[in-house]
Image 1: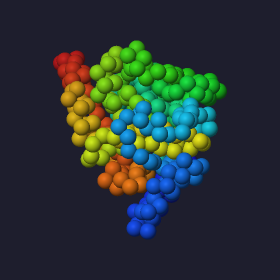
Image 2: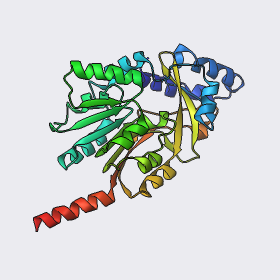
Image 3: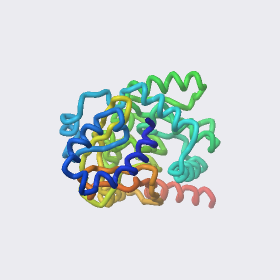
Length: 291
C-alpha cells in the first residue's frame, strides 16, 4: 500500500484508537497491527535514540529495499503534489539566480529531479547529486543511464557527500528524519562549503521535546525516525547565519502515535532558508559591477 494511502487510513481510525472502548486492548492491538502487512504508514512508540528504537523493531532492510524504490518511482517521479509547489518556486528562483548544483539528501532514485524537470527548464550546466542508501543509489544510476539523465549522480554516504563537494542548493524532502546523524545544524557545521539555499520539506516538527519513534515503511521494512522541536530546529539553523524566508504546512503527511496524542502531528512542515552572508556578498559584488 503506498504510504500516501496508508496515511489516510491512519487518520480514519484515530477516533477508534482514542475512544474509551479501545483503551483496554489498545497496546496489544496496535503493536500487532503496526507490525503486520496492513500497518504500512503507521507509527508506534517513543524512544530516546535510534539504537533503542531498532532494538525494539524486528530486523529489516529499512530503506535498503528495492520494492520501495519501485513504489517511489511510480508515485513521485511522474507527478508533483501540493507540497512540491513551494519547493518548485524557490528552486526556480535559485536557478534563475546563480545556482547550478543541487545536493538531494534522501532523493530515492532521483524522483525529485525527474518530477521537477517537467515543470522547470533546468540549465545545461546543472548538476543534481542524490545521497541515498546503496540499493536505491544503484537503481538510480541504472535509471539515469537509461533515461539519459546526465545531470544526475549518486552518493551513498552523507557525511562524505557534504564534506567533499560544495552545492548551491541542499534539498531534503521527507528524508532527514530517517537519518540518525543528519540534524541540519550538524551537517552545515561540517560541510565543505555551506549551501546558499536550504530547502527542507515534509519535516515532522511540533512544539514538544525531540524524540524518536518508529514507522512501518511498507514492503516488510521498518525504520526509526526523529521528531523535532520546531523552534529549536529553526533557531539552530538561523544561528549559523541563515534566514528563514518561507514555511508551509504539509497536510498530506501526519504522524499519529497511539497512546501519545500530545506527541502526534496533524501535518508536517516545509522550510526554506537562505545564507544571508553569502547572498549579501553576492549582492555587493553585483552592485560594484553595475557601477
